[in-house]
Image 1 (cartoon, rainbow, N blue to C red):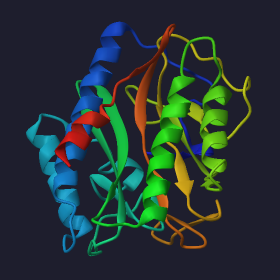
Image 2: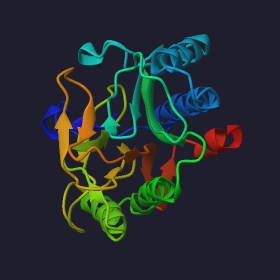
Image 3: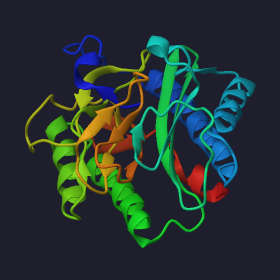
Image 4: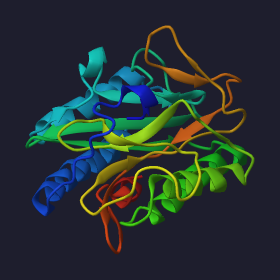
Length: 267
């Protein structure tokens, strides 16, 4: 769940996790991966985003967890479901999914005192070559950023990798929202922007757990915050894509706690 830069709690306080805590975070994010896979099975023309939200909530609760988004700072649903021009934080409702849509689903869990938070963008049928490339590039930008998530690097190394890859295809990189630390709270320090300079920002240390989440637009990077107080859409109404990993920082590289293969094997 991407967040505005100013909203992360205790921005200067970075909490390092023990191996045991990281395993609890892994358990949460694997559950989120499974929940995303379950929702993905039902994304088809004719379904409403409210129906998808119900599927997500029931799956999370049936597996012993609480939906972390529901009630978070007043958010009214269990899932953020953002369609086409909506970048993030789309509130589920009566919108009907159509052939050719791209649908970003962002889910969170609260289980055993820790939070899971991951997102995936789904293609509904034949979305066309331009939209497919946007999805592929956004996901690859996530992988490029994740490759920099190792102890001794800095947050800016992640940010620059995401930005440079996405912009090399002419896409926009949203500035107003960013990734974040995750642990007992959904949004912890440090903030993890999708733009920046290598060698800048907080030092990455073993035991940090962060969410990396490129939010990439087909056109201009400019966004609009809708009147509902949550939904963020592109100003030019061109499509956007959003993928999110939870990652533990290790000396020898990123330990990815989210598992996209669970999602992709179910499609």
